[in-house]
Image 1 (spheres, rainbow, N blue to C red):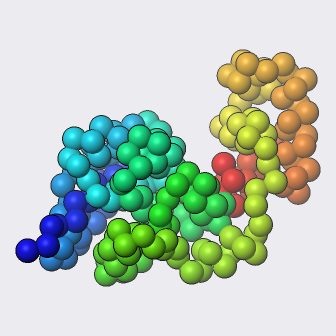
Image 2 (cartoon, rainbow, N blue to C red):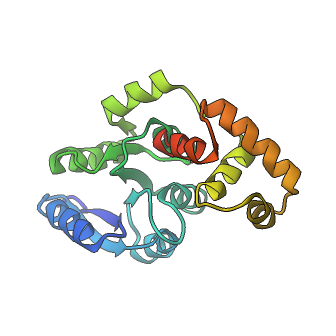
Length: 204
C-alpha cells in the first residue's frame, strides 16, 4: 500500500481550518497529521510530524505564511509548500514564489483542485492559480524597495513620522523621504492611500 501524504494545515480561523481538514481527509491518499493557527508554529509542527506538504495561509499571527514559507524552505527543504489565500493579489503571488512556495491557490478553489495541487507539488510540479498568474504578469513587479515597504506598512497603521522613525530606527527626515517616494510610486495622494494601494496589490 502506498504511503499516505502527510499534510500540515496552517490557518488562524479555526472554522476554516477544520473545514479544510475535513475535506482533505476525504481524499484516500491524504492525511492531515498536524494543524497550526500561527505562522511561528509552522516549523516546529512540520518537524514534529514529519510532514510532506505544508498548506499555509498568508495572513496569520506570529509570522505571515510567506515568512513561514521562507523559514521552511531554509530549514526543511524537502517539505513542499502550498500557499492558500483569501486575497487573490498578484503581489502576493510574486512574494510567495520568492519565498519558495511550490503552489499558490485561493481558498475558494474546489477541494479536489487543492488535493490535486498537493499531489502535483510532490511530483515536482509548480501549481499556480491561472487567473492570479495572468494578473501578476499584467501588474508587474512591486516598484517598492524593502525599506519603502517597511515604512508604508507602519504608516498604514496610522503611525506618525516620529513613531515610524522610532519603530524602524530611522531619522524622521529619512521617513519623510521614503513616504514621499512611495506615494509617487503608487500614484497615491497621501500615505494612507499609498498604503491601501500597496496592500491591495499585495506589495505589503
